[in-house]
Image (cartoon, rainbow, N blue to C red; front, side, top):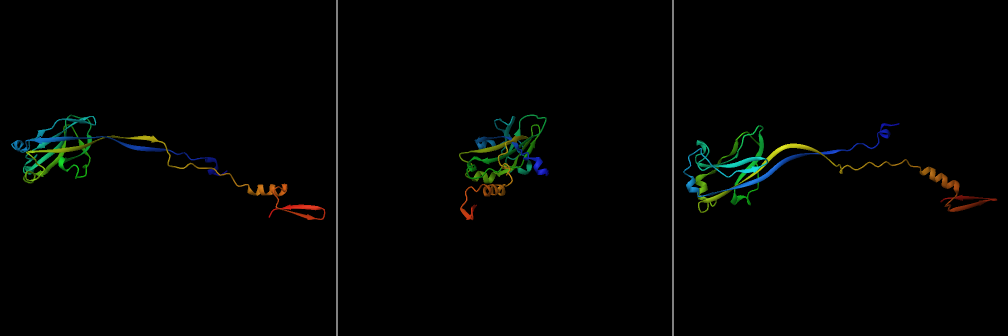
Length: 203
């Protein structure tokens, strides 16, 4: 007997790899921009804390840049506000609120946050250009930080509905049916009479 005949229907299974993630955003409004310009280079003003993905986050606003190379710029960073034993993976993007509807969300690469770590935009916007733009209105502006916190990947078994089931087709026995039909003379179309004998036939 052939292997195909003894194997029967093949085993079918399916599974899914699921990226468990928490999504959210925080809006930070700077009301009184001109007063924040007195903050020294390298120092920041801290936003309210956001809890997302089981971790605490906040935005660092540097009115005069986070380092000497960016003293002519405004800097923004997303920081982890806690100590962790294992690095926390996250993606984020910070945009002006006035551009959210005009600029598509384009999250950056995955960052591995260690205890109280931070990543961000050293040269978010040049102060001279910003102060002449329409982004600053009545000495006020807002930014939005979209965040995705990535947790561990998990695998789940799923129902396999995409693979069609195999159908076993029995061997043809048409020749047997035709032989039985001829012997029984049922359904004959023509009858021949030769001498004293009659013969049924099919066209």
